[in-house]
Length: 193
Image (cartoon, rainbow, N blue to C red; front, top):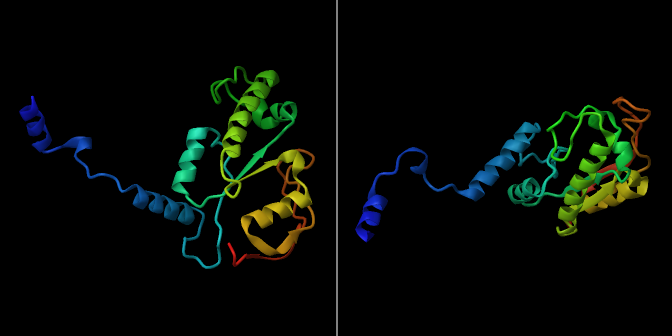
């Protein structure tokens, strides 16, 4: 039997098993470059010290852990809404199709939407609370205040600017953009960071 195993290991590997081992660090670096290019910049662009995006569909522990692994210096801002009833009645959830989320039974079923939201929120907040506070900041929609956004600026490592108001892009319903100037000063990345 030992001879048979030696012979198998000497065979030329073909197909999907014949490749070289993946250099995970190099792969992650390439994913970082790809993200930067997809956002219209590069990792070496001196105009940007932080690049990022809003993502609402990554909402489970495995995906978040993967994001944290690939984007090693990433900071996660975890937004959620404490009023699950209002969130369940929103246009997004009212038009959710069966099977789009686990535990969501019927399109337009606000109680089912509320249950699904509670489950996902609990999982997301449990994950967030297990992370280092320098990597994750929780922000409920109900806490969107000038003070909270100024905390966010500081947490991200910026100085020289402050929020003077909060934008309300969905104010009054719909998706109209509010062009009110809400930031005062010139945000500069802190040298200490």
